[in-house]
Length: 116
Image (tube, rainbow, N blue to C red; front, top):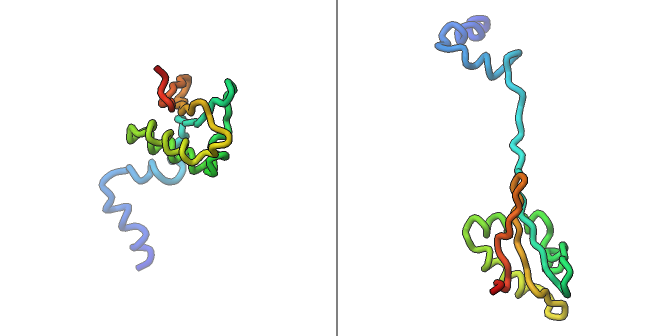
């Protein structure tokens, strides 16, 4: 009975597709690598600051999620306005910038306040 349970599925099988997924014909496991990155920068006294998210009290993984989320909802400008409100008024940034890096391309997504 046990032998029949092991052999019958191979007899009733209509194609050889499962053999390509398992065993010696298996394809190597591939990981999807996220090639797209977003960064938040601030300009303060003419210098580019990379640690704006730390001054806003947001850790790196959360800021990555928020930047991607607001970018795809076309609300990057709104996000920068919210970040500006959370930053300390004693050390204001002249402007905040979101950049998007994808492969060899880098683009400024949003800037607050918007330049003329």
